[in-house]
Length: 402
Image (cartoon, rainbow, N blue to C red; front, side, top):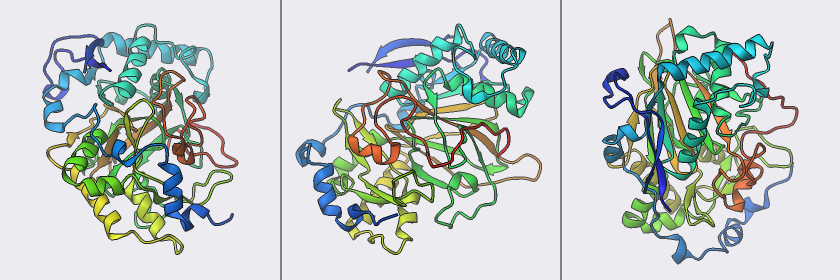
């Protein structure tokens, strides 16, 4: 399968990114106790029965390595042109002129982007079927109100799919900001703190992060190909690779869907019926589950396997570092990339603040997921109901402030 690449640099880019003034172009390239927690081995036999161990412990195509991909930044950095920003402004003015104020209801038919829209559709395809990440620059966030920038961000993402809720409050545009929460509390989600976030995937196919303001120090982003991590595990630590195909107990951190338990069990690495590798991982959620009295302790092999995974994810050989400046948007495909954030400190004037979007692509545009993913994604059927955090009494909303 030949994937597509994104060539989207322009001259005079921010922070010294040099390239020709290219437009977006697509070119070919390469309430009861959970019985599963009582019988992990029995569960494993059901979860992995369809695929033999020999088939699973192999390398996969689609890996990239940080130092090498960094040298090809012209493929994955998109600097918005003046014309593209003007088109965004026209779309924003149009929804305001019509008196539309429910951002949740906005879609391509409402937030109309005649030339930019098809490029965003192509970007979504590239995220899912290609490299798995992109870095957009040049949205002049300083000139917009909070409502405006939320509307714009949601409007852009809707060309890739449907925005899904990110927490029990139903936020479909979320705020990544230090709210003073205790990172050691097992129910705290780390995006509401200034603590480092370990390498993880989010509970949606695509995640977008729009920077509004930077931290005084720290808060840098790292991205790693989960396919590269897997391939290196197979080569260097094959026994750990096998362990990571077995289920781990994962906490929901109190955000429990109807009919579900406080924890669930799922392996970290999987391969799909399309012959691709996918991953679902957040060690902080595994460690939160371990703080529950009835969760089995990790075996020595499990702990070592997670350590091997984390070490590879943050290694200089695999990791790609990014610093998001105001107006930058990082787009990631969660099933094939892991991302992390360093700890940070804020001054008292303008603290670090990002907006987040979780997007579920439509049918025909999404990766085929293993059936076990329904435990976290509610359904594996592509569309508006796949992924996100869904609890009773939830109302979808876009709060302009955290």
